[in-house]
Length: 200
Ligand SMILES: C[S@@+](CC[C@H](N)C(=O)[O-])C[C@H]1O[C@@H](n2cnc3c(N)ncnc32)[C@H](O)[C@@H]1O
Image 1 (cartoon, rainbow, N blue to C red):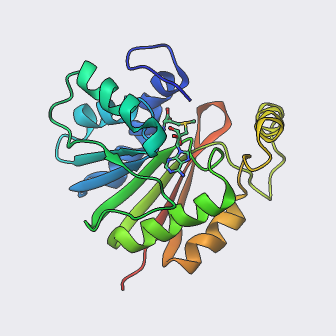
Image 2 (image 1 turned 135 degrees about the vertical axis):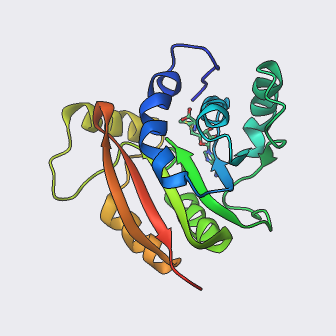
């Protein structure tokens, strides 16, 4: 969970393919909210790859100071100050063109995943995008051995964690005004999954 900008971490390795896949979806976006931003690795990439976007980072209050420190250390003064946002709590009143989260759905418990979709559904502009990156369970495909091992390790650490089924997430999305838009295969059996906000 701890990734340092410049480290050889998973976030460092994944940021380029994530932004290769994400950038075409965000060409017209102006304001993006990142949830569970960790140590800001994706925000740092966003500055370079999506210079037209105001990339609003956020982290759960318990890890907020770590994110603030990482952004200060990397001199990311072009980014707005990170928000302390637990997705289960109050969301910012602002509207966004996209909500992005990397490796968050399998870490959050199911109630928090529900709150993430509810919050995204409420704060996205019409046609805004919820974009989640990470490993997921595709019901029609066998789980790869590495993802099955990862899922088992997460559940052993905390039974509330674990890879989420895409059909469960689609059902959740539908309840919050979000329609499936894309599931993009990514390196190492990850996916970039995108839902689009319906008109209000
Ligand atoms: C595996 S880390 C991913 C960090 C970063 N996105 C990355 O890809 O390197 C999962 C993140 O989800 C955050 N998180 C977990 N529960 C949360 C909640 N209820 N609200 C907001 N963030 C949460 C954690 O604080 C952590 O930073």
